Image (cartoon, rainbow, N blue to C red; front, side, top):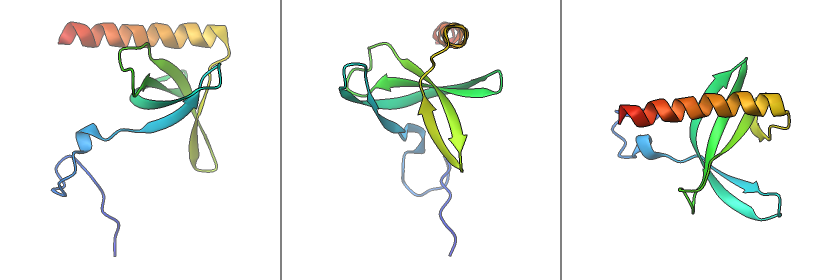
Length: 102
């Protein structure tokens, strides 16, 4: 038996367009927050994810680098200032462009 592969028009009744990728992220104060991945983008051979607080979607998003090891993906905080400046500038441009299109 083959595993069901979901797509927007697969007819299974699930709303694939709104599936959430939820992560538990511990902030600097040690508090756990449920974060939802809302966007991904690539820069310089790396993939980045933008996460928003599931309970406070109006709060600023957080950007993590997605790394893979042994066929598993995980989120890594960006420590390098130059990398942080580069990816935040990219995301701000993406957000600005998307808000202009609405």
